[in-house]
Image 1 (cartoon, rainbow over the protein chains, first blue to last red):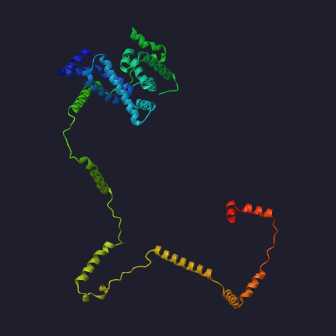
Image 2: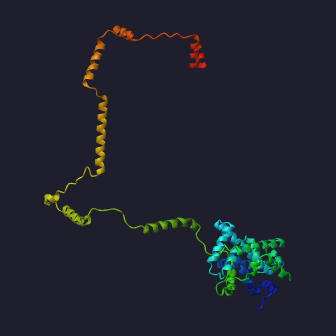
Image 3: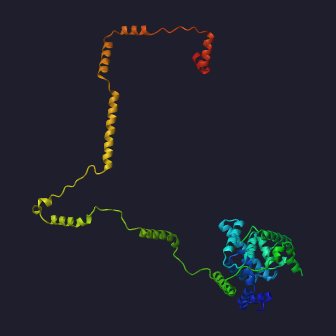
Length: 186
Length: 224
């Protein structure tokens, strides 16, 4: 299926008669990327499903105000990131748990999940990621899995490129140590 | 390419991680991404509806919710009552209901006939026996009170008791004293009182004694 250009989507969206069509095109183009970005953060499929729908509701409400000073993709990505972080923070507040406890809950959810097909190594890698602070995990996911540029990540997170590079390299080292630790087995 | 360098420079620092295949271990339900656009469109539509039509159109009487609480409590009390087993806890003597009918019939017969025609045996209703000691507790309590009162009385009596001989002797002594002359009694007492030895005390000893046993305020009061 030929990918529709962002400019075409925006143009169609600005016209009320083609707005719904534009929105459907936008969903089709970005739903998987946004879904996997959210899923890697919140782990659980149902949580990710809810959040993705919330993200696209916000996109629908605010796309008319989008000024093209950033790419459409990074703009949607930013909304998805903020929604995911808000969700994780709400979990902490609701259960009055710390970051470590939320990470433990996510790790347990990962082990119990019926929508995880990875082998032991993949499980260990995901567990390693869950030991990282939220922002570090975000940066690692966007760099390692999505292969975004530091400039794009900087646009999404509002963090300087230098800080992003440092954070990513620290994350990589931590994961390497975790993966090479034979005492941790899944 | 810059992107390749950027995305590869970390590999030297983490060779093991770099060696792992970049797979996505997560999965989704079947047909999820095919259905997702529809779910999203429905959600967006519902959200729009909520924004455009905030009021549902339904309304309730003004005091409805304030009264609802009490009504629900009342209902739950009724429900609770219904769930309680319907037993009153009262008991009747054995064969009570079997005998009751006969008793009622007998009384209705009595009341309908004039008194002379009713045989004495029927008329003579068995007198109602009221047992005084119907309760064991009452029996034991009465016995205990009786024992206590008796014991207390005996105790008091013993305190006041004196043998007859002692009583007679006391009476005789009193009579003697009454007959004797007063001056003789006084002289007798004085003669029996031993003389107190005269102790010689020096002034210094006296002074020390006074200072040790009397306070300044007491001394000044005495002097003044």
